[in-house]
Every structure is written in structure tokens, then in C-alpha cells.
Length: 128
Image (cartoon, rainbow, N blue to C red):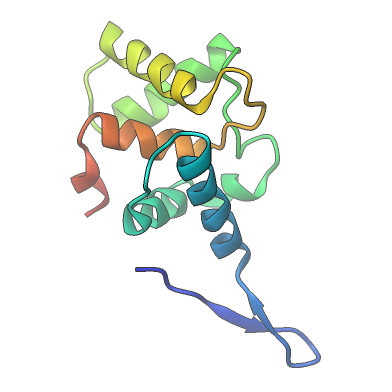
């Protein structure tokens, strides 16, 4: 289910919400770059869970070649958000997801990576 929030500019034209545009972009990446059919409800919840980071060019992506960034994904998302225990399996899952996204893909969106990790570990219930 996709919910569109409408806003009007000063001339009364209806504008789609920026978050909805980003969710559509993330869904496109999941379909065309990762070969997955996204669960739009879960993708929306994961995107909302990323907070304002999705609107920041640097924070909205995961730098797959930076060890500190991968530690952040592991500690802040997999351990703290999904409640997983730190183990080598977490590092392997991150590597697998980044590989699925495509090592040559420059923009690996955080919401897409988090979505794939959520699905990988079967933790959809975290997003109720």
C-alpha cells in the first residue's frame, strides 16, 4: 500500500512528497539493480525508519568500501535496530547485500541496503 501525501505550492498545484519520490527510486533499485520485487509497505517503513538521513546526499547512501561505514551499518542497524547479536554472520550478510546491489554501483541507498538486510534476516516484524 502506498500512501501519497499531497502538498500544494503557492499556485495551488499538487506536489508529490519528496519521501514518496525517494521510495519510488528505492523500489526501482530493488527491481532493476537487485532483482527483487519490493514489499512496498516494508520499504516505506524502512525508509521512514532512516529518518532525515534519506534527504542528505552523503547520509542517504552506504559507502561499501569504507570499513567504518560498514561497522555503522552493523552496529546501528543490525545490532541496535534489528536486535541481532554481533557475529561474523552480520558482516557476511552486509557483504552479500552489497554484492547483490552491485559492487560497481556508486549509489547504494541506505534504505535499500537496510530493506535487504531486514529481509535477509527475516526481521520484518521489527517494523510491525
